[in-house]
Image 1 (cartoon, rainbow, N blue to C red):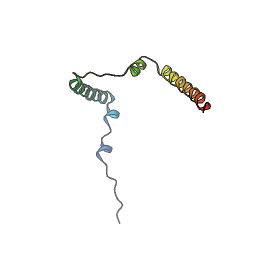
Image 2 (image 1 turned 120 degrees about the horizontal axis):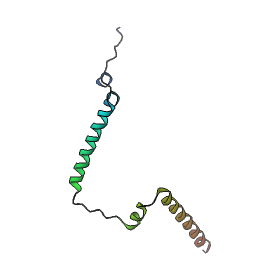
Image 3 (image 1 turned 90 degrees about the vertical axis):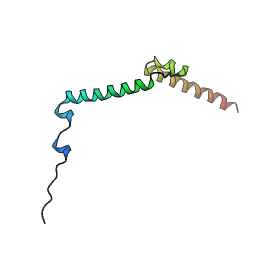
Image 4 (image 1 turned 60 degrees about the horizontal axis):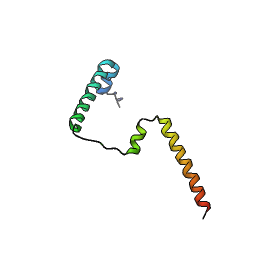
Length: 88
């Protein structure tokens, strides 16, 4: 019985472009991304997006501030529930 020879696939024969030429790979990816952005811009040019005030108010805040506010609301809600559950 003959031993099986390993077959080389195309992937093994030719290393990825990112390995061979990182600058060219980056440029190709940027070009593809820019084409996608252009397609989306053409499709969405006449769209208007409306977001609720509660979401808009958080856009300018840092992540730390948003999380701090969420934690404060959670604590306040727990206190409120503890007060109301004791009255029953």
